Structures are given as structure tokens and as C-alpha cells.
Image (cartoon, rainbow, N blue to C red; front, side, top):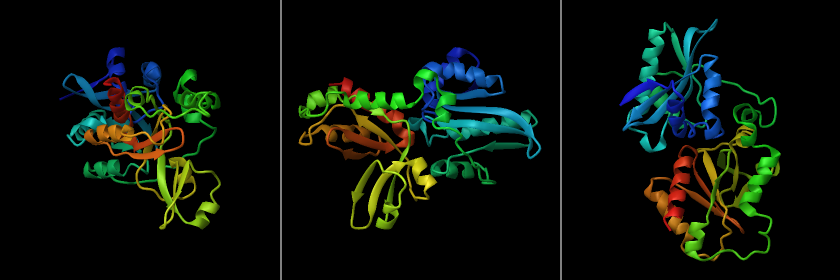
Length: 307
């Protein structure tokens, strides 16, 4: 195990497959250039290498302000989902602490999304304290993506329309769904949605007052289950537990197809990835833990190619 600062383009590029688990809106093509731009304002990218490749990365910078004095701020900290609970995150955070002390910093700071409860427990175990709330406000639609992604990678209205076209195609209406298992597996073409989703249970009264239409709704005796974006839930005070990524299988599967989802859920289960499946009229939609989404995509690709 070795921790280094990525200096060359090759080193930076090698960190992308770890960083994408935390920053999925950054494309592989733009990653090195984006890091180079950030370096001009003091950003540094450290990586922990195991068996010759990065398995954990941290983006950070040294700063100084009136509130904290001289400090190290951690922009990004992530370990490959397949390598977690093996001490890599702890080792990298310890390295950052030592680096901060050598640079004369009085404090180390980082922000963590409110939904990342496992990460919060990890930080507390590592001796960090919850000292403040972080407030934010989007100033324009899709602004974060416009700022962080190249023009061709922005989730604009045009891109969202193109995504729908890629999933459904112009000819999908009236088509008979595919039932042949081999063809389903070889042509599944998984598409990963860019926004995180959550499952919420609400009362009829709350449901009637929602200022938006949920992605999906299912009525149970205990309450109404809705699937909404994480941002919608947070904006409207809807409680949720885990955060999920949605993967749509582009192939139009028949509702009577046998074995298709069993193959998929079995493959993901063997990789230790939980999945909730929503089968709509034309497509199957897989909800997997947000932090495991890229591993799930890799598993689905491998399953399709093995047929």
C-alpha cells in the first residue's frame, strides 16, 4: 500500500475510475483537464495504490480564512466500493492529517452529504466532529453539471431527450416485448441515470400536496410508496433512508419473459449488490445503492458480454 500525489496526466487519469463513484457527472474524457484547471487554485489529488492501481483517492487543498486560520480542506474522498472496509479510507485520511500538520495547518475540514450515513460514522470513528451545517442553493438549472462537465456531457434538455430516445427509440410503441432469454441478456444495454433517487412512504394527504409527480407510485396498506429524486425529497422534507441509482435496461422486455431478472439479480447478488427492480410496461429499471452503481454497471456489462 502506497500513497502518492498524482502529478502526471497518466496518474490523474488512473484515478478516474475511483473518483467517478463520487463524482459521476465528470466524464472520463474531461477528468484530467478538469483536475489541471483546479490545480491552478491549489487543488491536489492524492491516491492510495494497491496491487499497482489506485483504490482510494482524495482531492484536497490548503487554504486560510478568518474562521479557521490555515486549514486543509478535503474536496473529495472515496474508496472503490469493491475495496471498502479494508482500511484504505482510514489510511488516506490519516495521510491527509499528517500532510496538513506538515503544512502548518491548524484544522482539517470536509463536507459530507446528509444521506451518506455510513460515511458519517466512518468520519466519527476517525476522530472528526460534526461542527456545523452546510447550506447551499442552486443558482441555475443544471448549474453543477454545466460547470463541471464539458458541453457534450451536460444533462441539458436535449441530452435528457436523447437519453429517452436511446432507451425507448422512436419505434418502441406497439412493439412486442422480447422474451428470448439470450437475446434479452445480450441486448439489455443498461443506461445509468445521473441523479440519485430515494424511496419514501407518505400518507394520502402528503401525496395529494406534492408539488411534483413522483417517478413511480405504489399503494400499500401501510402507506403510499413513492420513488423521487433525492433533491425532491430533501426540498419537501420527505424522510428516506438509503440513496439509490436507477439503471434502465434499454431492451424492451416482455412482461411474460422468464429468467431475465433472475439472471440479473443473481449476478448482482453474487457481487454483494442489493437491487430493487421496477418492471414497467416497456423496460425494467434497477435501483442499486448509489455508491455501488458503477460496479453494478460493470457487472451487467460483463453478464451481457458473456452470453
